[in-house]
Image (cartoon, rainbow, N blue to C red; front, side):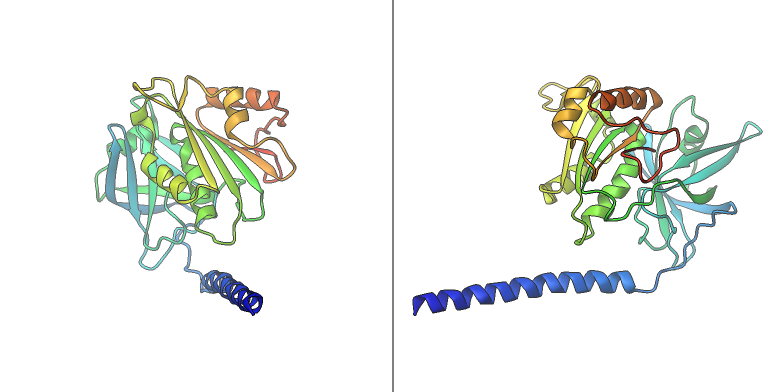
Length: 286
């Protein structure tokens, strides 16, 4: 009799679990089937967008929020970027940036930009005031992330190179059907340079089995428990997945760092990234 009761309870648990999983799948499917909002971007022409907010996150870094037409989304596939242009000292200058906002955000998009004294566009952004406009065109880039792209993704980012990584991390972790494992090594000079650390730590805490982050600093504070110095082959070997058919490595950061990471990955038998990376490459360089 006790055995029958136990089996009956076990069947009830299985039914409840199946129903819960089914509800998640149905909810996500319905979300995906909702009519898509018309994108604001046009890859063939420049468009002007108004700055509506500037959120300072460090002495030289801010999130710039731009307005989109009412009810519109930016229209940027996961992993892609936009071009921004400005006339500076009589010369037209263009740079590429990856928005940190999600493409289901309606009515606005965000750019995370660090201003450098010698930078053209970045310095221009630092001088922008709410109400000013910028010219934007896109989407651009070879990356078009999809949930079946890889089983495990290792990421190495430096400074503002975190932006395309964060875009992918957010997309993976908010999709209940995406089981991709994510590991990130994020390098900076000082602890104050770690951009969006609070969000990264919260995501790692909320998804401990799916996302791990390891910080590396050149000038660490007292008591620092992360990596020290430059990202090394040993750090990559310890904190990122090894080369496998269904594993990928993503790189984004200053050119000297990317060159050093390419050599380190080569020592770990990863293939060298191409000048222009493609989706089929094991190592993708933004």
